[in-house]
Image 1 (cartoon, rainbow, N blue to C red):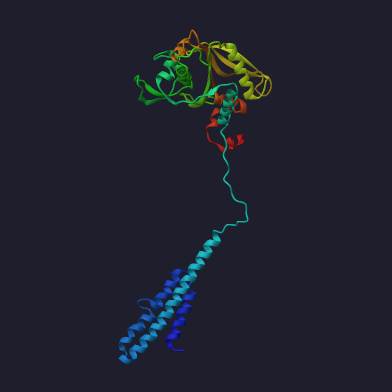
Image 2 (image 1 turned 60 degrees about the vertical axis):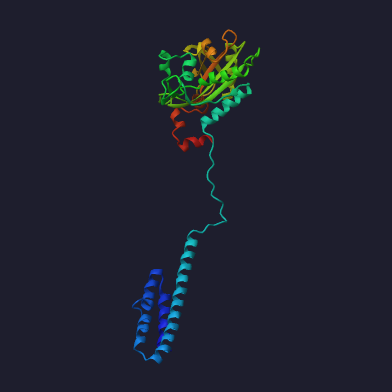
Length: 347
């Protein structure tokens, strides 16, 4: 074996001993670098006679090519080993059951709202939806609550830095009552010029906003407004309708209903609605669940109707309040804290 064969074997052994790409590059420099052994042999050709230089150069090139081939092969081996290690570390056992993302569910307040909508729909009520950013006229003036009226302090709300056509600031609606007027106006226009008009029966559930926050109040809360107007609608209809609703909502007939005199600018007379369960942990206590009353004649006019011909009632119930009573929740803030430990109980 000549010195060139020995050099190739030494290079192969050095490359085989490299366990990482960096070590392989160091081994390469010993043989193929600027000061490597093959490079030194090439430089020595200058000292040889012309006839010997040709054969010696050819032999050195053959050895160089063999060393480069060994280097390339070892590089590929190291790359394959690294890939196999990565694949092994990231391997998936396809025989195991898949990991599914946990499914979501309806929020308890949304569940309560869906239940309310279904119950009233079964009674023939439409479900209306409207803007949460309202004009001053729809939020207050149309509901017999003109500017500077003291009743406005009862519904301290949030305002948007933008003015409506009357120069009043837009507001985040403090109740869903504006939908009474919006829906009734559309209904009146639809049947304008006709001798008879079907009764207006509608509920308007949705988000409302007031500057209020404690265990039973939130700056953002949910309310369902109800309206029934016709030519022969009375408080008797309100009592029967609301009793049917509340019994269906709580799935029990073991509860009582009472009306307490109250004041709202958009109804006259007005009444608070209380319920009392005859069974369960809340039995024997009167609980306020809604405000109600006969729609004020001025509000009927603002709806585009004749108060001498049309009469009816309205009510407004807190969906969050009803959900608290249905699910036995004592602090309203739990609904909106986003704690999955609490919310998962309702799925």
